[in-house]
Image (cartoon, rainbow, N blue to C red; front, side, top):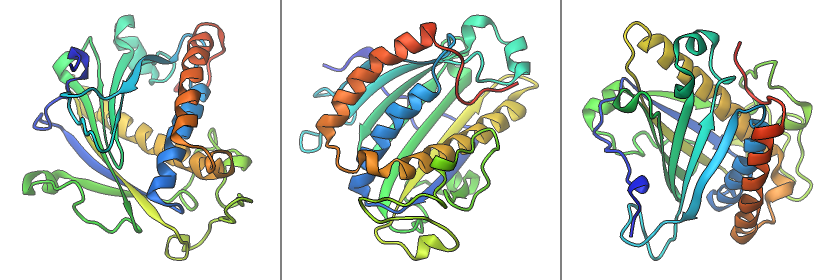
Length: 283
């Protein structure tokens, strides 16, 4: 039976912002499945410490009779809690009660379709981020991969992220995570540069649709803008890392990934309690 916590929000919730990010990568859709899971586990460690970071509450196969269950293509449900006091701008820390700087992430990974929801127990229905992701072969030229109705299409904006050519925040740049410098020994892919998306094979695209609401009088536009700016920074950094870690994960299986996730759960709890503050922080 499905648990109460595994019920998804309705897609019909009114959202102030609807934005689609398209990230093209030089790999197959199946390769990305492994790379993305590996990247999430590793990136979580880089963002955890000093009381902040990621707490894994639940990580299990999607149950029969639960949302998105598919017997032919098993999916994975995860519930994480993000502790964010150093990850938000100072003006939010000043205004927000201390117990409000936690965000719950519930995700149904039914690859190649994934759905992720973020909520806050303090703000309840006044805040949500609902993400639908579809992974397709090609260079990101499917114009309505999420089958949006005309009203949502009119509100949607599209932002194409280029992991090689887009400017990286100086706080985030690392030579070993630069796709313009990296060459995969196992696949002979990279370095990437110029009009690389039209020259590589294989090639695929992550289409990530964000529906965002932060309903707080006087701060809604500013906070939603901050959220989307942080999202772009995160997506750019993460997918640069996934490509530059290619030789580490390219030979892994889904069984290897599940073992890694189990080991990571304990590491994150120890790092969050005893490690220093790390990752993307805000002043």
